[in-house]
Length: 265
Ligand SMILES: C[S@@+](CC[C@H](N)C(=O)[O-])C[C@H]1O[C@@H](n2cnc3c(N)ncnc32)[C@H](O)[C@@H]1O
Image 1 (cartoon, rainbow, N blue to C red):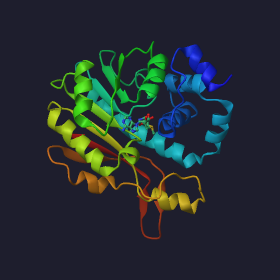
Image 2: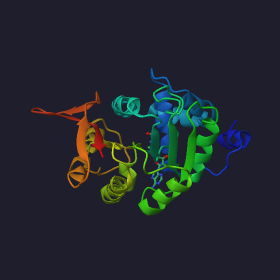
Image 3: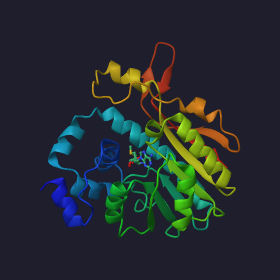
Image 4: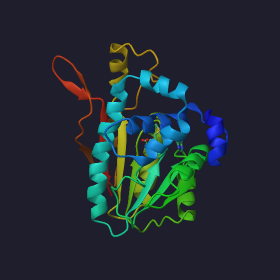
């Protein structure tokens, strides 16, 4: 069965995903194949990953999967600690793709998730999380248009007066640093006190790492420096979380290939 056949059967549009959107499927594939409880990711593999896709994804160097999983574990730890302090936590996924947190037993059932992404991804996300214990609201909006994004969130029922955890994983490479800074500043300006942003960022050294392992398919020649970007943030305390991400080891130092930052508002 082709992906299009499956798509029709699940009732989502047969419009194919572009490569940026498809990166959400790849990340879910990594979660489904790891020692990691993610029923949504398992459904992604069952319903969206064709045999050709699985073959291509298996050929990917597993270091990228390790980077994703290590970053996710660090973000989850911070998210759980924050959610435990909230009555009914509000979570906003920024480019959430096919995130599995609606079903991963991390969050109290009273929580609510808003997933901001493109319509083709959200159609698939909605179908795959329809029975999840934590309700998810699909919010079609662009991360590069913060005013419209905040307005779409409000229309979807998000209340800016409720402390919120915003999660941006696997998106900085696509927005670029300037647009991410604009988005972060807009969120900081609007979110209630006690809110938090979790930002995951690949280290710029990953470009060198990919060259060293001979990965000719690596998509980026240059990656944004999230540390430098976050030095420009005002109105939030910025912390870097510890991760067990793989490192690039030099004679004198080693650099983590992924970082997770927590911005306390
Ligand atoms: C690498 S995936 C990450 C998905 C998810 N955060 C995860 O970690 O599994 C990138 C996601 O960001 C979305 N995305 C990229 N640029 C976007 C933009 N400008 N506006 C909304 N979504 C965007 C893509 O559609 C895709 O679902």
